[in-house]
Image (cartoon, rainbow, N blue to C red):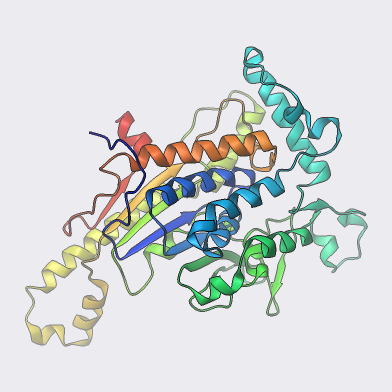
Length: 389
């Protein structure tokens, strides 16, 4: 039996509540809708981990008091999706909805907006370089990307209180890639002083956006290595009972493409979904092995536990439990491979509404937040998957 409402649920019985946000550009409004539903339920995460647009959303949430977070997210998304100039840019804002025209009409309109973003950029976010990068001197920042993201710094500073992030109490983790080493690097508020540059680095996807220099090193979008920061949360020490809301903007599952645009979209979905479910299944298997090890060590003589090997095995054992709640954006039929840079106001609202609706449906299901048994250690929940089973 479902709950009548998702509101007022309050904090579930876990030591930590984490919100993990994938990258996906313009699709990130879906994550804002999810957070709105969590906020309405009285569930405020104490750990936010994000990559790319997920890092921006995470920083906005962590950098505002709870009562202002939804408003700050809304302000940001309205800022970067303000109607573009020109006939193509504002067409959907000025044209009424014509459902009779069906999928083909909406696909054309979305393509027009995506083209406007390519040609004009997104306000308060990025703008095309003039002159273009191939006319810039080699070695300069301007020669390494098609777009200038300097406007994003001012937008972030207007929506995020970085002093609040660095003072706590909400932990913030941002995934990046070191350009020279190629290694995944997380900037974490528990060990680093987070600045706008750290947020921008997490979303610096080449060759569109330039690398961001931080303390002498250059960083790109963490999605180049993995678009999902779940591993950073689940492998954290010391281990804690954790409820994680994993919000993905790309679905690993999909249909066989029928044409080249659908091929391009399906390629992106597979590439950027980062095999979330496979990684979750592997983590679940590992945690059950650790739980079994804990049970076995309870039968081992105390003198053996005091050996170097015994202490090593004891450190690997666990009795902590993890609940991973999946919320995954499912593309509409008219969306194509440009959906992650289609910054129209109409699409933003639809993505936000989709995230809110999916989260409400999830929170209304009493099974969603149930604490796993110590024996099972890890359990996952996806309301869409559970209802189709």
